[in-house]
Length: 125
Image (cartoon, rainbow, N blue to C red; front, side):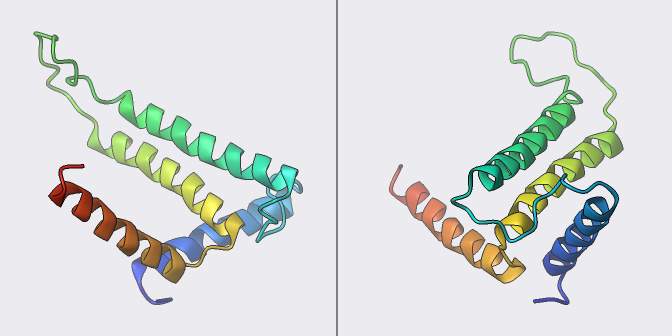
């Protein structure tokens, strides 16, 4: 899977994380982390929360979501929205890298969950 885009994205994030680690020791723990270790769990939580924060920044660009809002905002900066979403994915990729998850493992988990959610839809979950 190393030639596909998901694999490339994992590699790009890990390469960036290594550069950050070289320039700012201690920002990331050595990975893969021990998932039972307290500091490792704190680092994973921190990365996930940073991803969530970036998603909130992306959501600030959505102005027409309120059902009671009568006026329509006619401008939307798609590029900025996409950039914030990419920032969020970078933190989520960092989380996966720190956990030692490979692109293949992630894709397999994604496929497994896709089957589950489709089954839920069929059964009126």
